[in-house]
Length: 173
Image 1 (spheres, rainbow, N blue to C red):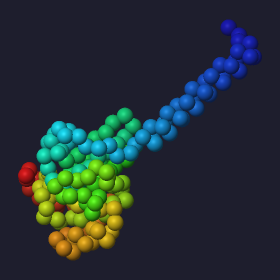
Image 2: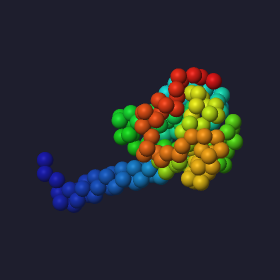
Image 3: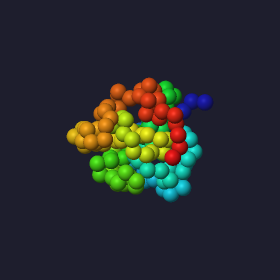
Image 4: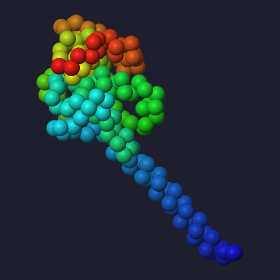
């Protein structure tokens, strides 16, 4: 069946509109990847524990069509280090503990996990035993490390060996 030139042009225009609409949807989804407040009763994506039952900074991965929440920064980072998760298009968030109470982290202060500073070796309680304290500013992280012991690391410096050292025997508190 042959189509007239005007009909072909109309179909082509419609097709390109659909393609461009898809681009708008992708841009819209990308724009909606901001942090999502934690709700009472939500469970950790990795271990299934109720997140609000534990002290310390939490983490979340917000991807197009999915939000994964974690009971600790260590759980988020351990999940992220799995290669298949790094291709999810997720944005990662953690609490800024300079602006939050350790026992009740403030969701108004969720920050980009990839630009955060982490204090490893803090003895404060977390969901999976010791955790990594997260901060938006290096000075705040260094202050905690100096006051309570520990060392400051960037996101890119955290690997499985760091997390294994943090979790120790993986006791639940």
